[in-house]
Length: 403
Image 1 (cartoon, rainbow, N blue to C red):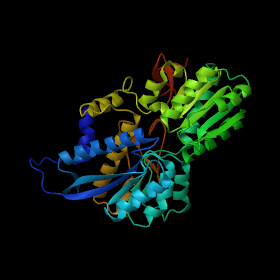
Image 2: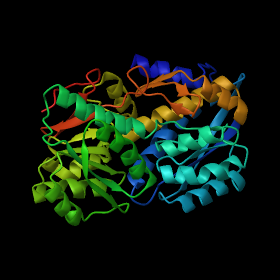
Image 3: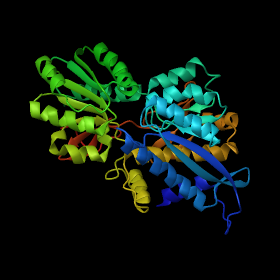
Image 4: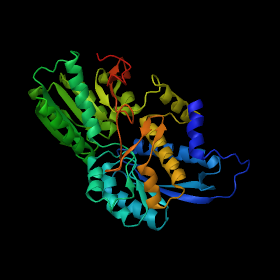
């Protein structure tokens, strides 16, 4: 567990006082879905954030300019609804008077809604998993207003690029034959679902693919028989599905099997949740999915984090892994900034170079978004093989061959 000790030492400031001195408390407000269709992810993020905070507090707090400060996390539910997220953020920034805000931990639509509101309070704001490129566009379009807002996950075009490169790469390698090069999309009617589709479709069209299905469904939708009936007539070679609701993913995958639709199913997001695989059983066999962020079976760094969380009774998954590293990165930047004053903390974020279990955080300072790639945060594509997800693309991340 050498790596674990190294990361924790960096976070805690390596102080060796036998009895921690009394420290000022830093209040961090966190907005995320604790109920609703994305509650499992929101709760996992809460567990991961609190895990890091507990580790820091156990050593007396985070050291800033020679003084230790304990962390007090205050969580509020957004239920993945923008209006609830905005209300929660206002409550945290006014009544609770938090020093900085994290919001949303998961939903892009909530983050987009609360960005304008939070900026007016003059506090530092960071988002968690939201990947919508619209967030980055808002930052670029008004750098002064959003100078102190930073994402801790990549843009949605990363998933689109990963899916496209995997399908094209496997085709060029002779491992997949797409026939007529027809593609269809089934996605939730949220900013997350729409932005992923928006970026993936042009990539495929430019490569000679034809879209034969474009089906938007409500968040949490579970009856896909009407959509699948149309898709069977169009016979897509590849079907891309995009959901944050695990139940939607389970329903679609099972109904694809039931209706006999012959297609390469490529999923974005929901298969990283363990309950998807528990709920879908063998019906997910051979499907592709991204992002494979956490593979404690085949990746030694991921295994170390899994064991660290497990020692506290947490069964780690991809949401926990992202939450852990995002919050650990925030703590490290607080320590380097020596303050939670927004401008100083933003300066620290601009020079971030933080290596964690899931990858290395380095920012594109034009849009306040972490960089992706083999040297930064990798976005791997996995395939379900004999009930086990294994990375098959890119080759630098692959632990198995595509079947």
